[in-house]
Image 1 (tube, one colour):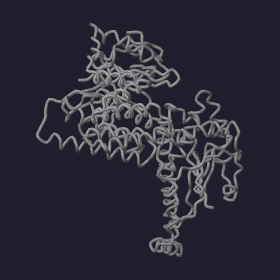
Image 2 (tube, rainbow, N blue to C red):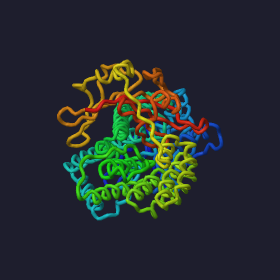
Image 3 (cartoon, rainbow, N blue to C red):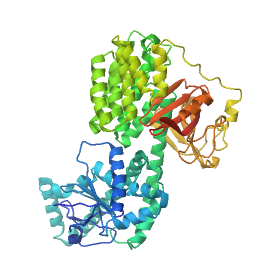
Image 4 (tube, helix red, strand yellow):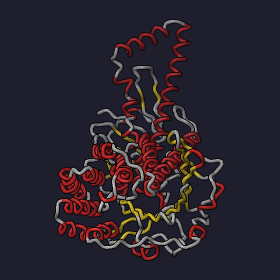
Length: 578
């Protein structure tokens, strides 16, 4: 059995050129025989069960099941922190000593463990093992043999030995540099994976590495390693990159919520270049779908709101190629939903959105199939109550189209159990009842509404700060630290000529304040509707919905509570468009 271990702190050193025989360094250098020895697995211990739960959340969040998913185990052996073994079978393990270091972070213990295990999963999904094993695997090729012969010829003369020594040193350093890059990428993408799995922004990676160095008795400087301070610095840099990627993703979500689907599409695609997750493909598809609805459908074509529906605002321009263009966008959406499904065949949101796309193309047969067969199977397997009820809403729309209004009413009524807003909207349309009027913005609303004591109208575009060029004509900016935002974030999307969209958003789980209408974290959907009225627009999410009050410039991000059978406020956002 061949084993290739990637230690979080270790750096692979190549000791020969081309047909490289490599040895793995763990935190404390060990002989190769010790690294390949059989590991005693800790099974059914409380520590193992807790770590396994974290690992399974990470695997589910990654959502890429095209390849064998590595098994997980823990071991009492000490030397490599957390590693991946390219079997067969392929396995990822965590050492008990590393588990205890993670536990020292208290309420951040699971996040620290997710950081370590996400790092190893990133190695696997980015195929770092294949890259490191390339030289050995292809040493039989003619070009490898020719290079090996050249190295031997260089060794035969005094001058050649000097050249050989220099080339060997260069080769070793270049491999070390590549391994540093892989470690940094694993920190970066592993951190984003941990965030995607719900463990928040763990930005203590450098502190975790420092504690691991202490626990494992690693010297600050050891041959074959970057120094301790360099490794901590690598993690800190990766953490900043990861937080920026999270902010770009958040910006894409908020742009979608306010109907800026073309801009949101660009932001999602920027993330997709870095992280090819099922949610990214799905969300790119959603922006194509919603853009088609906004720009290329007439109001009388859309009696009901679809489960993916955010906005039914109609565009003023229409051309003779309207049907062709909207079908092109819908087909692009379906291609991205298919990409999400190819990563995870049980990812129910992609089936729901694919069915909605076919319904909008008037292909009711395929819409029924992907909703009632494929989508229901995936949602049932995942015990995804929200998805099941959203599928009922879509099937109700299809029933109405086929002339069965009674069945449509039955489905909409059933869906009210978890999707009250969308189901009640469609019931009102079905029964030809008037819709609730949108709330009227009171005078001075914006002046009264603040987050972290900041009024979004008074915040100007920052002259300095971090900037990313998302596309030729749109850039992303993070606010300067000088605003001293303690429980929130301020993000900008900037178009030419100063056309800037601002979002000031509370951080989930940490904002102590309330809105001007006394709504705070944990408020129910019912509380929000009582204070603000039914939202004129909303977008469904796998966790709940985003309630959008565009006239008021505020978004409420809701998370469904299955026990309470109601959604609860997770965070909210103030925004200002140009």
